[in-house]
Image (cartoon, rainbow, N blue to C red; front, side, top):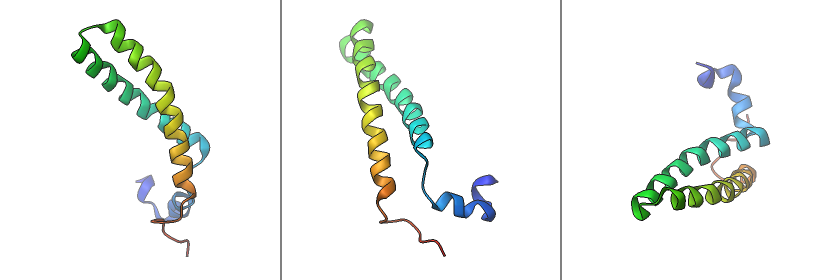
Length: 83
C-alpha cells in the first residue's frame, strides 16, 4: 500500500502542500455543510433557511479550516524528526 511504503515515508513526514490542504478543506466542508443543512432543516422545518445557513458557513469554515491546517503544519510538536 502506498501509504505504508517505506520508500515514501520521507515524503509523508515533510508535511502537506497548500494544494493538499485546500482539497482537504473543500472535501471536509462539503461533508460538514451537508450536515449543517440537515440539522438546520430538522430544527427549522424550512429548506430555504437551511440552505441559506449552509451556503454561508461553507465558505467561512473552509477558510478557517485552511488556515488552521497551515498553522498546524508549521508546529513541530508531535511530528517525527527526519533521521
